[in-house]
Length: 164
Image 1 (spheres, rainbow, N blue to C red):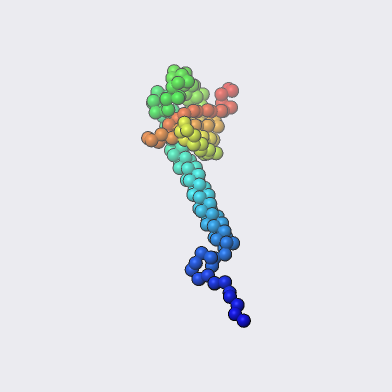
Image 2: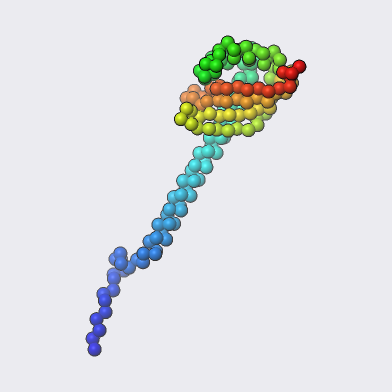
């Protein structure tokens, strides 16, 4: 008796690879690509925080030098135009009052750093515990990242020396 067997597929033909195996390979590649993408995003966020902290430290030191020298007009000139929109003369008077009440800045230590990228720009919000000749203060600087570096966008200071 002659039995006819179905033809066996050749080793390299698509019929020889089971469907399950191709799905497993697809999932492995998907996981690998997803992992690489997540690692890239984490690296970008980490480097953004590092750069924001590094640049803001130098910018705060420069701000304190100008404040100590009474260069209030220069601070406003170098700041983002949003600072002047709130009132050019009022901000200069505010800086003058801060310097009069607190005195010269002698040291600063960085607290928290937050980087926020929006359609309006990249903002770096950093807090500093600063020491002035007239007492300690908690300063919060909001910087906006521009092509030329960080520009002062907002400045907030709190100190018990203001109560005296």
